[in-house]
Length: 258
Ligand code: MN
Image 1 (cartoon, rainbow, N blue to C red):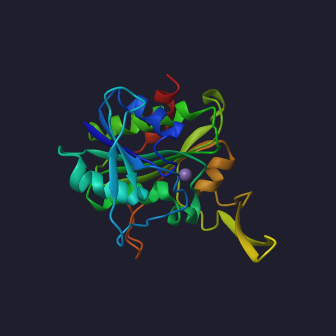
Image 2 (cartoon, rainbow, N blue to C red):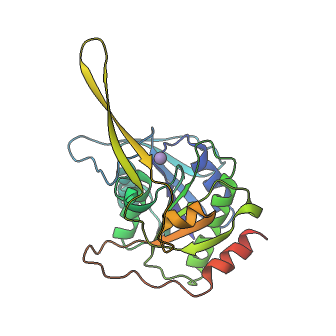
């Protein structure tokens, strides 16, 4: 199995390398990621300037690693169309430090990168944790690896695009795993105003909405201390995504805690 790994936190992010280290145990991993942080860049692609790529020394030995002066989506497109000569079986984006829930998937660079894999017919995972400098990145890395194995063994459909989020909890404190749908409201946007001495400026400030009430949503699952797995799709007319097998969540949780 060959896995393309990318992110939106930049090529030096610890979440990316924790993920690579774990996936490297079960697959050939290639890393193609932005040279700097690109969080909230969404699905942006660079069409009006050239893209520069540099092969760089990996933080996990013998993993082909390319740094891109471009967006997460640029990185995946470049990887799949040009840089990786062999067939890629899965695209994994993350581990993002910070949740990507609800309508936030539309501005998330992490999810945007995974989307480019899915649009090219590959299974794609976006994986995020509920913290910056999370102490529990290993849970997410292990979960991504379990999902990759299930995709490789055809236990999961291959035309899937999953948005996975984990609470920032040690493994024994994680309550469960839930298949969810996106919450309609995960954030409020406010605009703060200031003055830099010369001119007025504005800061966009996003705040997470607390206390979800709908138990089917990703925000509810996370607030209750669960792992949230949301199948996404790109049919804006609402065609449902392929069903996931019964018992997947309990199986994943059991395997994660082994
Ligand atoms: Mn990010």
